[in-house]
Image 1 (tube, rainbow, N blue to C red):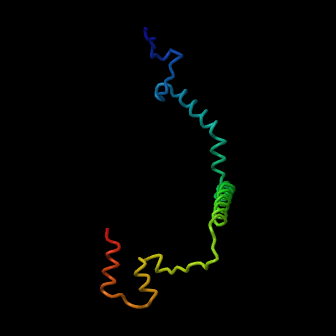
Image 2: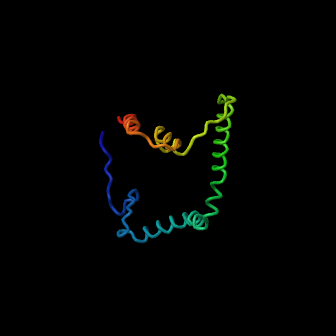
Length: 124
């Protein structure tokens, strides 16, 4: 099969040459057309304020919050709830290893063997 031969001449109407130096008037007409069509969109974006942008996010954020609340309620309802009192957790138990937290909550200083045992628990 023979390939079609395209001529790259300035008189060929099928060739769309976008070189601004060869056809400055055509180039300016293309730029003017693009700017004219983009004008309303750019003006609408220019007029948007922070409050307008945030108000556009109001419905998606509320829908997400409602979904999270529904999931949390479902988990609370479906979890087996006993009649036992909730377990109190101190800040030391959350931040530190349990043995160190017990020492802090107890108010007494650990012995050397307690320190060695605590370090041994966390050694890989």
